Figure 1 (cartoon, rainbow, N blue to C red):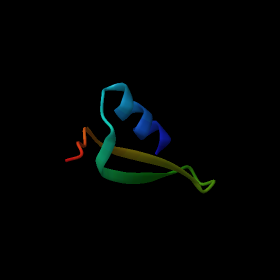
Figure 2: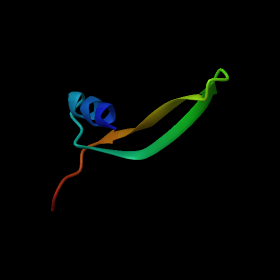
Figure 3: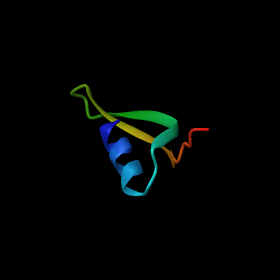
Figure 4: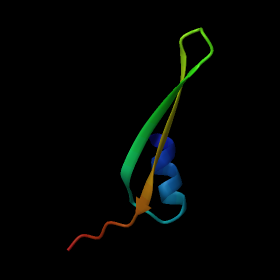
Length: 46
């Protein structure tokens, strides 16, 4: 989540919407690879 926030800020966004998590089992050791993705947006206050 910190990386999503950081990358959004790098491209001028101040929020991330539509966050999706996915996971995949790796091998038989019980390890999981988790990925998160979303869309960077600019939220403006009225």
